[in-house]
Length: 300
Ligand code: Q46
Ligand code: ZN
Image (tube, rainbow, N blue to C red; front, side):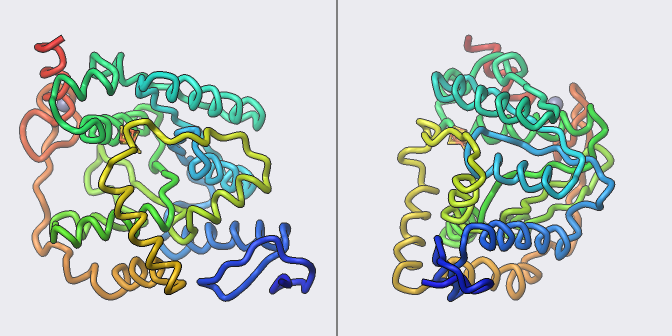
């Protein structure tokens, strides 16, 4: 197996690109894919400050690594979900990465902000853990960006994540979720930061290879609540499809973004208000985060 660029010995084969790369040329390919994502979706300008949401996993730390390498001004944001040893270890990985690279890291605790950690929120709401967790993460990321005057939040979602989310939305024809599925969501209100996913062109296997080759120390274990989540089942199905038809995930996601997504964009804009309590954006009067915090307070 020879490297497509230099003809040297390849370390990684990318079947969907019908190519193989040696280590230096793979790292170059990886960075170019991130740069292409940023350029194509005008995610941020060279001089903009970027808040990188990091979980301690390979994807978000690989993303942070590329942005630092490319000379962007970044601040990391670690949300401490309070999920047993998983949170303790993943926080340590993020702190270690930030210290080693000399970059700032903000740490926000869900238990302090909501009133209880994710496992307790799950019991209080009697809903799947990812529901209260996801809601809290979106809210706290946006609030941290606003508080620090950072216009854009970048997350480490990769091609596999995005294809699996799309698959789930299409299976249930969640037509309100489809227009929101995009590598870059603009700010539609003065209190909403832009949200971008610069790894959407790269597969999970590719981010793992990048993290390995760059010797990034990341948490290998997944969140214990990820097991049994339907998104994992969707990922497995798509990976089986990818095995027999390389490029299937790519074509599914990219085809949607180019051909189908525009058809789902809503004609009329949603009216956004400010939450009467916390001032963050909501479609109602009291935002979902404040309602969740109330529920936690009542039942704990
Ligand atoms: S949403 Fe669910 Fe994740 Fe939160 S509870 Fe764990 S698996 S961390 S990406
Ligand atoms: Zn609120």
